[in-house]
Image 1 (cartoon, chains in turn brown, orange):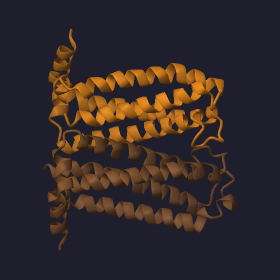
Image 2 (tube, chains in turn red, brown; image 1 turned 90 degrees about the horizontal axis):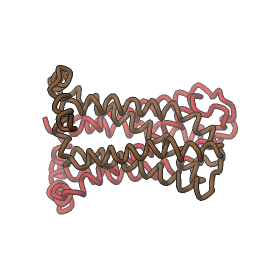
Image 3 (cartoon, each protein chain N blue to C red; image 1 turned 90 degrees about the vertical axis):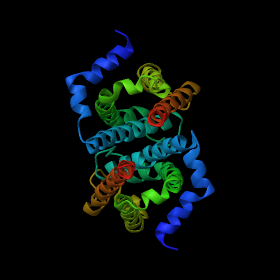
Image 4 (cartoon, chains in turn cyan, blue; image 1 turned 30 degrees about the horizontal axis):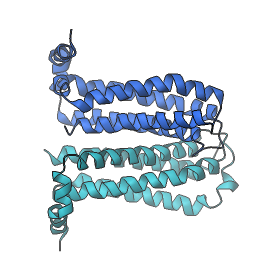
Length: 165
Length: 157
């Protein structure tokens, strides 16, 4: 089954049809996608600013990173789950848009950046993260995260614009 | 002048017609400004509200959280107001019959009122974890999330 056929199957599925035809479900899911975005990307923004030395610079990185992690991940799960539902509701239209694949690409790169940061730096955060000035590669990881998530949001917002043209 | 007359005047003004004539991708840019403002504002509110509830960055004094998020909060609000006006003016009359549009501004008024009164007082008192602090944290967060939800609903009705 090709990607186009698969997206058409999702679009025609009971769930896809129900999401499209319901008066309240679609706006509620959109609203939750937005709240999830503010929680995940919004809080990650503060972590990234800490890595850049621009937010609470006197506070050790671990004391910003660790307490916010469950909220961040919860926000990402909400955004991801609602994103899948939004995709199912309009799958056959969205799959034809290059901007959708750009968005997925940016998310994948942001994920790789976070994974690399976690494996390379996250484990011994107490060893390097106490002072305000952090290693250059850590600052680069923070800047990369900020850039990639901004690009993800921009690409995401363009999806409805380009699909109704 | 009634609200509807004001909306009509705004929309048919030179500026309103100028905005209405812009390419629709520029509207996407304004909406992106609105989303960026929303992320800055909601994340700042979330961080401070969680602190009041004794969650999130709970080891950091509230006053310090307040100081370090205040600039992002006001930057976010300024971005929201400017982009919001640019989105609203060229289509002002179409928002008039929309219930969610009015609900949004009732919630926004309440959110700002609580933020500038009760919240300020609780934040100054440094009484985190107390019932009043927790109630205020929950109230502030719910109201701002309500504003965002009502705002997202406008476009669907």
